[in-house]
Length: 114
Length: 114
Image (cartoon, rainbow over all chains, first blue to last red; front, side, top):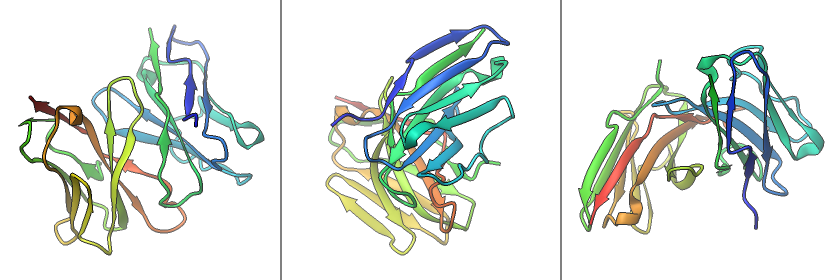
């Protein structure tokens, strides 16, 4: 079956612009996660969605970052007024349930802010 | 403060020999540990995991060892194959309501030389 897909695969934007990154999780997976990997760093947790519960936004680095998950499926991560330090690979993952269940990752979106 | 540390950014091993990747953690609340493997331009893929109630878990050529008193785990790959060349991430999660939140190390790039 299809894995987690993300679009676009690459995005170059000017400082100050807004960007939207999209994630299509594996069908039937109720949990969805966003991570960020900056150059030379590990993956950094950003936000978590589980079913209809309120998302865990504790990892979002600033109020310029927001995310939505519509209909319990597709998710969009939005970064407003992008800064150069936002440049990173943004990874989405999904899992069948939550807790210690295996997370399946998409290929990521490489964001470059110039 | 990095709670999961992979102190070796890179490792080179001859094909057929053993690869040993190390990981240290500082948070005593971590009770579940995972290894992910990442090829360039792809998302991480789950490799193997271990619960804190065990000290060893084996899956084919891959074995993970956990030393709780030392807060140390290691991944052994025997025998190493060229296709194992990738970046390996150690990750950990804590018990309880936030158990879905993985904390990753910075990764170790493994090169298996034919």
